[in-house]
Image 1 (cartoon, rainbow, N blue to C red):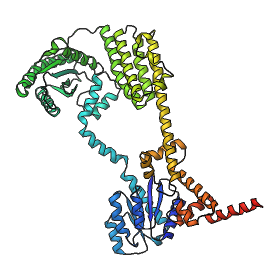
Image 2 (cartoon, one colour; image 1 turned 90 degrees about the vertical axis):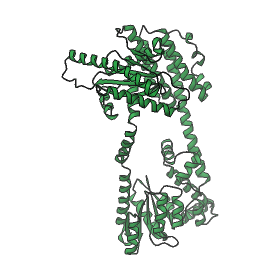
Image 3 (cartoon, helix red, strand yellow; image 1 turned 30 degrees about the vertical axis):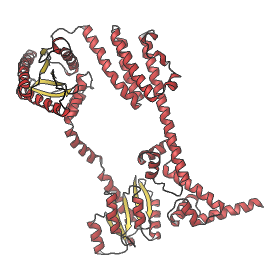
Image 4 (tube, rainbow, N blue to C red; image 1 turned 180 degrees about the vertical axis):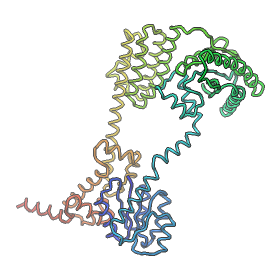
Length: 561
């Protein structure tokens, strides 16, 4: 929606142009009018103006002076000068100040409409999606390291991408590693951050460690790295930098083995350099083999476990992932742990009111655990109380115990032994989630209707005052554009239509009372000029205000006889 402000000190010109555009019924155009430059300035101080159709020569402040004020408020506003003076100096000044067009009042209606359409096109092109996309791409380049970290961290924590999406995601994030070839993980841990080390200094040290690693490793391998766990660890994901497309299975295995030997030897050099140059102790854990991308999460978890227990708790350790065969029990536990990590997403979905996504994710997690007949009770217990934490936190913060407690027995939530089996647990939390989402949706509906009532009350109480969308938005505490969409969505009526209906009802009431003069009624219902008032009334009832008043009097007299 764009706003066209028509400015002229001659009311006949303003009314004629308003009638013209009302007849043309351009859907994306909202019409406003002003009968002086001062009135136009007051208008643009309350609402955004997109196009101004203005006379050049007006008393007090000329159209050119008005234009200089316009661009202080709305730099993108397009100005069309409409004048009866075919004066080169005026034309030159208008064009120099950035006027969109220059029209003589004698050029006719079609020329005026064409000029406004030209301005609308210019405005639309100025906000084309391509411009925003180009700007976003520039910003994305600065965010590339963060995007890489987010994507790769998701993968190593067990996240999965649909077939074909991994290659595209790597390309978009400018990741040089090959998503179709195996990869090996290496984790570094800073053993001894000093207590007074600032976050900024930690970042500098981490960059230094990454540069040391790249200096030693880049000649032999491709790598990408990033920090995690609050700047205490670094993860490297590594592939050979040699072409492997023509290698046999045996040759590829030999290449990967040479690469692993190189990593182990180079890791010692990295530790020594960090100790000597940075005065930091660095422990390193290296994967024992290259893994497909959909298996790298298992290796990441094994390396984390190496560093978090036993020898891994000592300083400057160099640990290699054991090459033991992964048993079905190990794989089962890993799969179950993946479900635990997915629980974190549920809290976000619950807070955001995303019911469908929440239910789909919840069912997926619980189904995976239910189908594992051999699932460890400890894992199930951990899942259970993680869910308790998510739901209980939400219930307490939003104080919905009484509302939800009427549908679901909240006493059973904190006692696992109250449920006879795992299926009962699954059903219980499903019903609890449904109750919370329904309460949330009902609350949303109530709040929306409260906003609508506030809007309507303000309109009724200020029918002669400022009823611009910006002002109403300020009163009810909502963005004007959002408020306009919300009103239409809830009432199936545009807010401007409601305002016009309210003004018409008040006008009829005052005309029927027969106490005020027509021009007084015009002011009482918020019109800036009698011309606008007459035009509005005639359009609504196909008669003038005076004709309506006379018809009421005639009707009353007939009833009295």
